[in-house]
Image 1 (cartoon, helix red, strand yellow):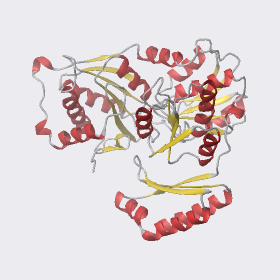
Image 2: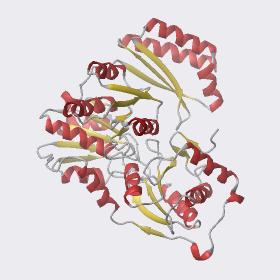
Image 3: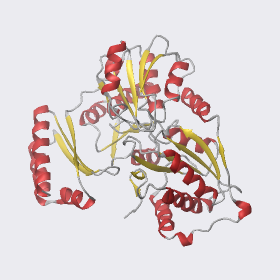
Image 4: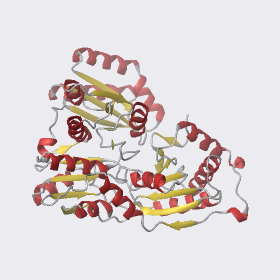
Length: 452
């Protein structure tokens, strides 16, 4: 079982193991040693980005120390979205990309995501090699004094990513006449998202664009979309765009302030791609994707594939089978024609392109399919042992089986342990809202009783 890596890199409370300076430096050294043996370059290179958390300075410096001690040339890009780091890793022919972020978590947390030279998150095999070296630091071989690396700041990183985003949509796309609220969660996209939208012609209303090191994701961004919805209504905007702390997730709202999740965004864009015959094979979702979307795609004879939760699972399925759109209801959306990982800003631009092309509004696109009522409930747990007890207890599994028999294919239950937070996530989906509410309440009570 992995000691450091979770479902999305290494993550935890800042200044507490494993998110300490010491372990970040060792992670840089271990990662450097693993990748150095595969590097075709005389001087291997790593791109290091971060979001706006206060602890980012500490971890960024520690990673630089670790990588330079292994002979790496460090390209420092500062606050920049996770997908920008993945893109730059490929574009600059770097060996590794590293992003310092805890994504949608509060500022007290931080984490480290690692990409290979192809801009794809590293495999479990590589994670295992890195963890082995972290646990056995005596096996880490530092370079000789004449081969120590150095760090430089990449001053044009924002400009490179800006042009990349604009090149993902037609050259003639103009957002003139649109008023757009953009909420950057006081995170990594606070400079770049408003800039891209303004350069394409939109009138931009900025919120969540004033980071102070502590306010990332605080009552704003993709995990708190109400701020976006309120701003859209108060400014009479045409739609809202809400990103999370590292901008790899997107939640939107229409001109009425109604939230559009990842499923509705994917459905609208995939339908347009299907019409234009640019959709390759079908669409990839996860076990959390709404059953209403699955039924909708089935009616259009569009293949729909489910994977486990996590954009890395979605990306893997897309690469293996040749799909060019996929994502999660939580807002990770991948367009493999352009990117290797979830990209909130790129997804927003694709939605806006469809909206302009079809001369329609956000509320029409955002109701592409009729969603099944769905309720998500998070149960806080003290440790993994309690989480496992909840998931495997015979009373819980038996109760779930009874509910599924009652639903008879018109709904489903999903319970899973979060890979990023001390939570057990409960999802109930059915055709009727009352059924969802009642089953969620009774299931959560049953789960909490077994560990009381």
